[in-house]
Length: 609
Image (cartoon, rainbow, N blue to C red; front, side, top):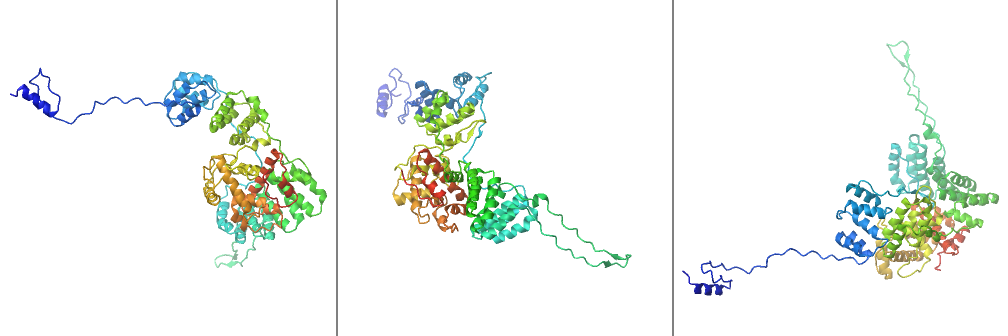
């Protein structure tokens, strides 16, 4: 038996806790490593409560539900309180809320964009009735700035699809003769409209190659009725004598082919017929045949449903009449062209006639009529704190639930808040019956490049409207980014050549800086000679194609514009110049380039004012 004294000394030597002295028979504990303290429950995470509304909205986007809820509760009442709650309640993955919470929010703010979703949520939580919501109407097109474009390909004809595919490689290499042979072989098998489409394509190749007589010949064939060639005579063989038959047996003769249907032989209608007529007019102009040119251009003006092309037809018909020395017929044609006040050729006609070319600026004071609407107050507060996308969403929603008569006021609010993409949208889409002035479609924010303006801001705005419709986040299929659709490779080239800081192309100041630098570069490029239409064309297509285009323009800038091989650039240049004149008109600037073109002179690059 171990004595108590020995046990005590042994325990002390091991460094282990001793057995209580009143229990001498307790077993000696085995030695072991020092243990950690027993685990404790983890501390509750510290919630960083947002101190302002930007922090609340950032917490909602980041899924920080507790922080967002605490921030909403802690901040003073604001026009944004209900909106923040609605965003929190409807965010994906946010904590469940009761029917009573949702009903209280709907009663407070039924005009919110999330109201429909909140109503469904309340019913799913067991509510039997909810606050009636404002009627939400669909938005429809209410107008647009006229723009020329390509007609849509003819569909529903397998033979046309086959022919188009066969012609495609020939079109790419400008082999007009081979493409024409394919077309002629298929004429009895395709509709009149398909003949106009494919004929126009072949005629345009001839025109670009400078073969104007062939271009006009094919264009006339494309736009007119089709007369099938006469059937080939059938050789009749002498009767065959059959020894078992009584008399000769007649040789069977194949019946003649059925004539093509009326859908094939009639003259085509629709946009491709007008496009073919347009090529005929241009080719006739270059052939010095003013009479045929006038007829073709008049038909384009009279038949085209596209305002830009109709104005172009009447304007060029007036030019043809002047070339034919019939001045009495010029002014009537110009007056018809001038009715299209928002088109390139309409503005040229108005300047030629001495009519007003400026478009009245947007009535910003109209915004006061809806200033008290809750969504307007929220939008203004959102812009103040930098939540511009949310502000635009509120204005677009208000267009759906408000009165159609408020559309101009909504556009004016968007303009005042410089929500330019939203202004552009509301200038084009509204409830049935909504009307807006033309100026609604031309946002004019006070944005500027980081380095300041070195070119006329109106020219930059003219490009921005055409490139992105003022959507700062826009990215094209080709990878062009932002307001002025700057390619990252273009940005890198400018950074290396001019030492600009790279920056984020989705930032308006950065993007407009690179857009301005690229326009300046194009201005000094040898391909443009500083001539404005070529500078604009180079911005769209690049300077190398513009430098390669050998256009038989006879020193005529309008003929050069209409003869560019790339259809996109051919329509882009007049649109940007139209935009430029409208923006200059807003600022009360003289539209010098409009004067120069109306006098058939090459317009110079606009100076910074």
